[in-house]
Image (cartoon, rainbow, N blue to C red; front, top):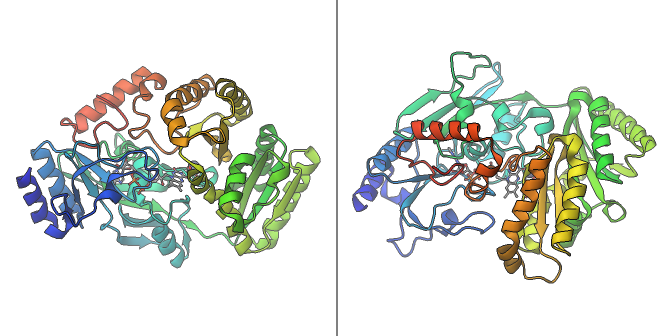
Length: 474
Ligand code: FAD
Ligand code: MLT
Ligand code: ZN
């Protein structure tokens, strides 16, 4: 292996190939996942600075049958971006490839390198007078390469779609170390199979994304945020229907949060002052983006809330009076993941169900879990506008979280996934499969689809060096 390490050092520069040989180098940040569920050991962490360097690294690895784990911000929640424990996989970190290569205002596109941090991309777009709408709580550290790798969702999907819908072109280094120059920026191109869509969401198993051309949108004239207390999940779904009807394309966010999830946000972030949650089982966060004016947005919101209250699907509501208040409401929503982690280790789910079936799913699955495991605490929240729930399970009060997860994770997953399957949903809406759901996928994915996925993987990566053991097991 030392000859591989020597080659990698020649390609990227010695200071950008980190190994355990140097006792003063701490690789742990690249070796464990954000939730600290998986602790791996890398042969090396390699940090190329250009597409040519990525291609040369992949070729050197292919020549020695060395597997590669692409990594961006390492904020993934399914342990897909960290090496296994063998000490034989390299972590290919894209962090140094973080340039904005071009912004084309007439084409409404921006071309960025894979390691560009999402927040920096949003900022660059805004400075040029545009909106890049992908938004998630990890945006200060996740990268666009990771967003594409996972086809991330986030809080604006109800209007703008997943990362997939925002991408018009890719540059990719294949598993053979060749470069596919696909940064077209075209909105229409019917010249055969859409390889861009194959790469997006492939979680580093088919190639390395080195750059992407992303869509830009006009900045709205006003963005208003409202927080509504709703008496049931049925009422939340009814409110969603009314919001579509009254706000049309202005509806850019529709997030639901259960009372227990909000109590954790309140417990760990008391300065955020969570409104209305104590008297109601669910709260909803709505965002209205308006291209006319703030007054127009406010009128629309007030009309919507009036109708919703008359219909009985909202019991109380507040509309943010300032940008600071709106940010504060979003911060509450975005603090839930962190609050939940501080409460202790938990079993996370990232599921989607047809929106119309979500109330029945929640009622049935809550009852099932509480019957099988009395006292479990359900941290439910998520992107109701997209039918995507984070249906998370926390140990009963006073029970050791590590022991609970160790002893119950498999059973909880089976109960939840069976219920998801019954309601014709998906076991991953946005986080992906990674290594955490790879064993479950064959039970829940159509066998013909699975076979096609397998042959695509074998054909594009015959040596199985690209993030092996993630998404699909061969
Ligand atoms: P990483 O974690 O580094 O990698 C993720 C996957 O992509 C891995 O399989 C990796 O191998 C692959 N990959 C990374 N870079 C590349 C590349 N250049 N080419 C090919 N493959 C690559 N996710 C959502 O979808 N919606 C949310 O609302 C959301 N909220 C979050 C909130 C918090 C607090 C946290 C911690 C995470 C959240 N996530 C969310 C999960 C995570 O942020 C996303 O999955 C994000 O897209 C990962 O980006 P990353 O750069 O950190 O990727
Ligand atoms: C979110 O919507 O906040 C994320 O997907 C993170 C999570 O599931 O905890
Ligand atoms: Zn989410």
